[in-house]
Length: 357
Image (cartoon, rainbow, N blue to C red):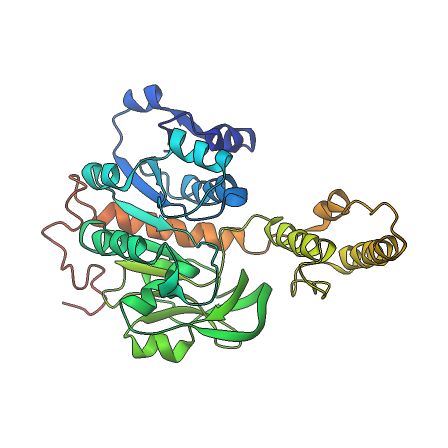
């Protein structure tokens, strides 16, 4: 069954307009179908708050139609927000205390913006670690996205991320390196994933932590890995949840920083993302923009509407397949009382029986 609109969250209506199946809460109550309660700890900044909701909810809603999916949103009060962002959180999000009281079957944790380079110095560091420790003991599986993967590798496995020479930015080919793991069953053996980050946890660090790598980029950068037991923690280092336009929006923001004088360098194109036609349009825009800045004349409008029709999405189907497998395993392993993450027939140290009997 689809996502259940269990609040007045605007993202439900936006998803419905995009063609997603959204079930009203009163309709859901009339159906004798098992519920799955999926938490989303959304740490993204205000400008990306609602887009991130839709990206992850879309993946969950398009996955295995075996249950009614009830989303539960929360964030960390330590994150600074503007008036509009705080109003959205106050109106539609729950507190962590409410989440703990109600319980979850699965949890997704997004990335976050940082000031400075040290994770342990960020205001979200301690509260995020508290959420993750609670989830490890009380939630069947937690999916960690990008920066959260780096945080878990540091505080739980003592593996600190390392800065990259330049931003890893674009859409990159990947391959499945463990084709038997349930999370990648039925997934294309080669597929694309968007990345956008300045830091990396390298494959040897995942190995030192005793984690299992499932998907790597062709230059051995890790995209998907899992905890020792095979499922309790799922790590994404890329951004399979991204929409087709997400990297374009990031590029546009970088152009805005150049216009405002925050950087002297005009941003390079994200790798393997813009077609030759898009690049030609954007190069012409850059020339016109620089001329306008030099002459002090009116700046041209970023050619977003000309670019969007030519943006290809080469990763969503695979992302949907992985999330489908993840939701399916959560369904199998979660006790009907969702406060009990594993039932009596499952070894919590090896819930997928990957090590054999």
